[in-house]
Image 1 (cartoon, helix red, strand yellow):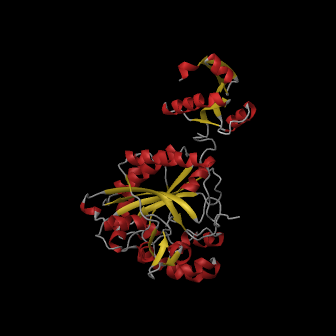
Image 2: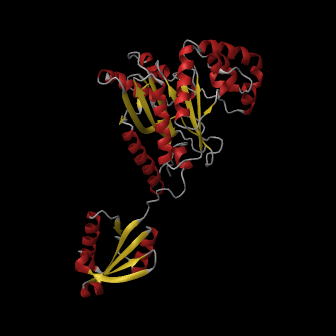
Image 3: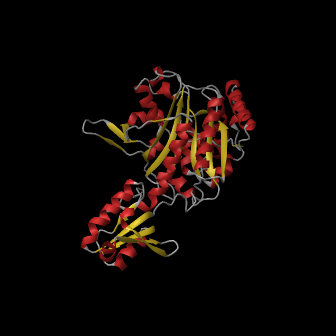
Length: 410
């Protein structure tokens, strides 16, 4: 018997209604904020992610699904959405069409990491990217969009963490100070972070290992090293958030794991959910140099990604449970089948969710089937009903039934 690949999960019909709810609500919000959908291939040249995500990130070093095609070209399944969207933005020269371009995407991503609750090797991500806006006001819009999304998903018990990680001008000074701080404490760090001290020291700050969290508790704070431009941008954003009564927490440990981030970074953690320690459902920030790095003009950008599996685990259990039928039609006898099919099709044309048990079993078995379909009402048409030109409508919610005129129904 074949089984799904480890870390790759089927989404069965009973679960799909929640996924559709999330996607439908999100599309409404994106439309209101004037974001347009973009769809990119799941396969890209490996070099795109090495340059865009960063060679010293865990994603590129350990997690990508990479292989050579028949022409010897190295390809990878996309591990995140931003690099592909930037590549498409540059390739289409969309910057010539409009000074500001706002996109959203919904799609499947792939990372070869240890599967755990809310984290799979094939996972789904939704995100937005805004190109061409440099001001703190665009950061503010992104944060308001995220608030609108979480409100639409009916997720209200969350915390919004923000930080500034500086830019190419001021971050090197901070990295040097951080390396000085971490080097004598290297042996106290986890195995991964011992390597990160020299290659990507900022990643040590957001490591989930308890030993690393103890070490970085007294580490230098990045906001103390910001240049005038980064400091002004950060203060402008904070003032906008304060003016709009947005709840946020400034956390100097929010650095994100990808090399392309500059200035504003943020994360959202859900407090009461089934996620446990893995309760970060959303993260993002500003990446002003990435478009130029991947071969385009020097254009500012900001965006975020949200993990849909984690959102699903954060939803109310009964939210948008539409696994029901408005009507089940029960046909009893050969002569009633044609009439029953006409009724089914007529009700569907009128916009109702309708089905029937095409096995045409006994009354008892068809009623059992209707119950399993969570039918609100059942229409019964048998030989006796045909002769009397009536049908029986049974209300499954209050267990009442009535005889009604068949010609009115048809």
